[in-house]
Length: 396
Image 1: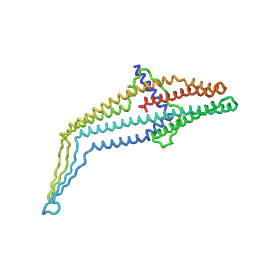
Image 2: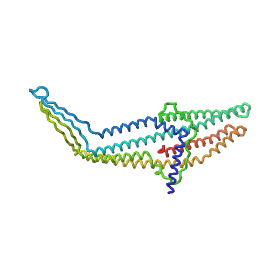
Image 3: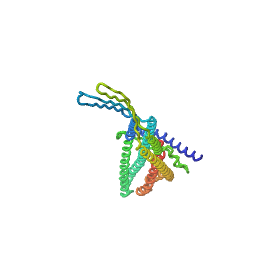
Image 4: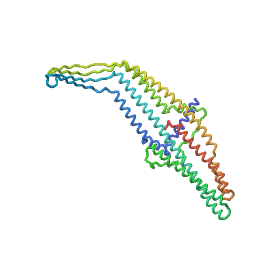
């Protein structure tokens, strides 16, 4: 009972985070992707087409009309003729079985669409998180550039007064060069991420603008003993495999009714000069040789669907367990890095430089180490957010 409470508590946290995200831009992006993504649009049309095709396959066969004129020596025109109008049809129970099979096949396609939708929306979510991460990195780079510019002006004046060395000024200039290269890399990655997001959302290039600069989701902690199987109850991949299994089971039932004769009925009219005779046509065809093979083929497909379902379950559980472990590890790593302490130390170091108690070379040697820690923090934070998005992907 305690474990169940933990499960539902975490699921509540995940669901609450989803609602919170919609107010920060992510919700609108997910909506745009669901409405405009070209892959999803094509998949919806495929489902519509399959529904019409399956419905057409379960209707009456085309009505057959045959007319045969006969000619004879000594008779002008048509000496005799035969008109046959016939209709072939299956036993009513077979139509009902095929109708149910068609509905299950459409349900399987819809389950596959749900899985595709989940993966595309997850890609939108992950790309959005990468964009936020790049913005946070850019903020740090801009701060470092501002510090470098201030220090360059300061040490150029000190150099003129003889209180600084050319080596210190050159060190600051090289730092500016490195920072400009990092900014160019950041801008390139940001542009690529925005292009990917626009493609996923079916938007024109340059039409999207992300104003958010903070991650929209809080980071919940995972309780010890939490099981991955509790997070996959609504996994769309498993649901799609289950739907395919149900459809294949109905196909077996349809195949087993294949022994039922196909019936035909019709009208026949024969003419001989001025005389005509009318009659009815009835018949049946018996599938004596193909039924057993069709049943075996359907049973084999059902067995394959059962194996695919077990495979989907194993993969989902394995992936979810790995993500839960990764999330817990990243969360602990993030707690180790104290951003407040780092920022406080950087501020004290800048004051030491301003007061002349620290050289530019010493400042950059020490600050590089601190900024590396900030970079590690941003990387871990981004990985945490993306892992959380993967954990809650079935709630998108």
